[in-house]
Image (tube, rainbow, N blue to C red; front, side, top):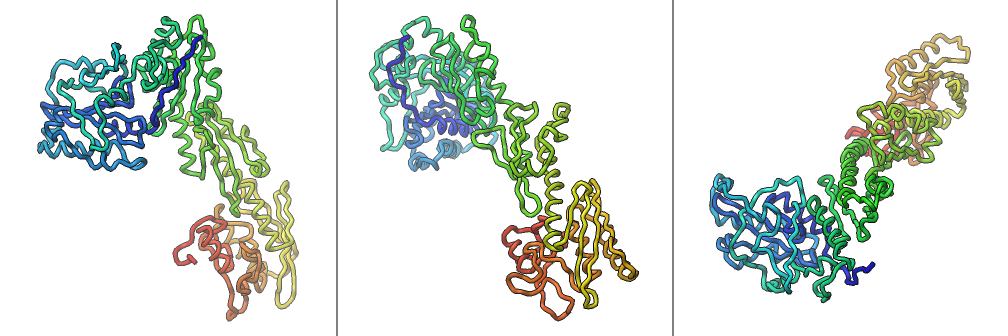
Length: 593
């Protein structure tokens, strides 16, 4: 089969042009892509009760390096003159200049000259017969340029780039169009025609006018060429697009304000199955179009569907991205999370727990509304024994109407806190009290506390029993060592009662209970700093606490969770993290370092 021997037309930045067009349509809704050519825009800048002030925009081949070409109608020229110097156009700079700013400046000049009140500016135009040219979205005659040679430029019908913009009829201007541009940027009329109106041969084969290609067909078969063009026309009627040949196109699918995807379709071998190339950001959602799109999977060359049917099916699948995006935004609102590379459906969330430990969980909604794919990080798998499929939210997913992935993260966060909290608490007890035994099956902690009583060293054994719903419910602590001192027994009971009756699952810990017991029994608390786990401060050497009132100490206490710090350890923690290392709450202003 003969292939096109001509090289592809060198194109400007399509993404840049498309973004500019979107911005223009947002500010000036009465604009069209002429003949579905996104590089050639026509529209109404301003209108009064009797007149419309229209302009054309052409994007040069090296846009945005060079400024666009702006052409005005006779109405604008009569109002502003034939030489109009626009600062936004004269000072065009790649990366910072916007085409919509040129239109705003021009409109400001028009409004100033009109000197009309707001009511007159907004008055509707007189009713008249529909414009034949714009009823079909084809190029009005004054804007239709002829290529060199005998063949006219092929006019193609297509809707505007954004179907969400209301189509309005525009009176076809019958006046001569004037060109304005600073002297150093002027294009000749001949050059403008050559740039904007490629030959018919270029339309068919993708050869640039400068290539000097002879008129010919793409495939060498006139009937097949006609069939390919018919498929192209069907796409043009429904979608914004550009092409290099009549069988090699890029289709722009706008799913939301923030999401526009460029889909490459090659159907040179039609009626055989075409080739669809998706951007990397969609490959996680549709890794294999040939098996995931029903139109491609069931393709029958003897009775092929239209190429536009593939795009319609793909567009329908992509619309689910809007809902997926909304679901994932809720995760971003509650947790630290990032999208996985080249994915619009998968995120990795970071869960911070006690002692600043980090755990990661990945959720992929590529099969939404079916169950998501949930993956634990290695340290998370080692911590919690509940697999993703055993999570309550996952088990109830199919019967749930809401189907909120953030609920999965919440459940995992609760499991992490539950499991990591016990590990954290036992480690803290062992660091401070040394002699600690933990039985996870019986959920009991045996603690031996040593200290000075009336100059004598003594020790007491305590047993703490943790309920199944700990820390939602407080622990039960009992003295194992026999004690005949009723006064001491009363001190311990009072110390524990005050703590356990005000138990806060988010701010109360086992270490607090034993610290209260230690203060009630011994002369000096045996509890160390929760950061450095030492009694003397590693920086200044002063003790965390002292029974002597005149002895200088180095002590700070979190006002929310009542954790004991060395003052220097507290200052360093707040300076580094901005919050308590355990209740994770920022301190009041008077406790800032």
